[in-house]
Image (cartoon, rainbow, N blue to C red):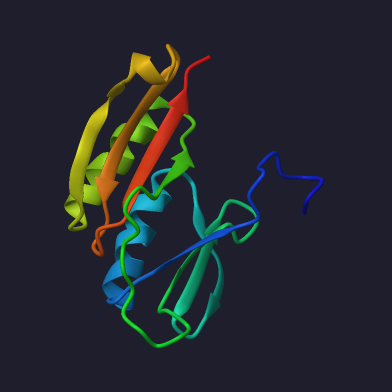
Length: 131
């Protein structure tokens, strides 16, 4: 796996307090970026294109999941249309916009992205670099 992936991250996990609703949210939203479920365990599901890179799960310690201030997770989109579809799917699935799709030149001229809050309040992003 390490030789095949250009990423520097093995995987990221976020907790949820409403697993089934959150899974339905991420199933719909990540499908817009060709990201699918690649592994499942009771109370946990892993998404990726090839490998389990993003985990959604009930916290292992049994405590309530909480949102970390300043944390957000960005997913790679392959086009501006995918960024737009990600945003639309998130809103249609109960998420809240935290920045509509569009260019943000202060991140770099080729940047096009959007920000949303998932059902638990986690900030997620879809980013396309039009280089």
